[in-house]
Length: 288
Image (cartoon, rainbow, N blue to C red; front, side, top):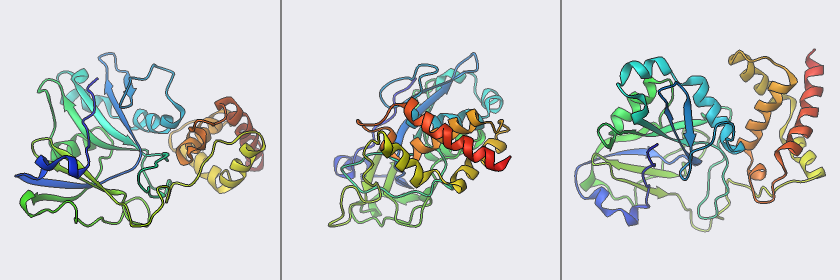
């Protein structure tokens, strides 16, 4: 599987702005996710560093992997390419991350996709596809790419240091930054760093819970309304609304929305699953 391209800060990528035209996109905060379809029809996933073993997807990535598996149009993709294994898809898995170098927005998880496409690499051409092609490829396979903010801006007219940061498409507030792309495959990011802002603005201080603090975390987040949305997601995917299935989806969603389940002091998955299952069971009884 192809490695994902680097996204350096604008100060380290002056060549991106040397000539030509630029596309500009919202910088969406999350973690890199890549995948490809094998000849046998299986989707293989990885992050920026490694390929995940089947059945060993890190908890914080499972919401994104599920979204790809449920939406990826395998037949349409096979019809469009001669060698499916030659194509690597790059995405951002949109979940809460522990950032210490820049503020991050508090996304509206109910409306924010679990994955947004960022790159497509075609090994038969040994290149990453241009931005307009990336948009159309992701649309064809049933996934959404990061939407452009602006297209075909003359690089000579763009001052990246003063380029305005737009409102985010995924919550009611400013974007985390912008990403510049040129037609030669160059990329650069400008992050929003308000003067005096804490590095943890919009992130929170999610220390890993344990014991009764797991219960406090669930008290704060796992409300009946929250579980209603998990139930609706199960129905939309035509999954059974059993305690086991709902607990699995709820666990994935909880890991997406809080870094507390991914930090160095995080509780074990089995501890959280056990406490969550008890709440899901009570919730299901109220719906019976």
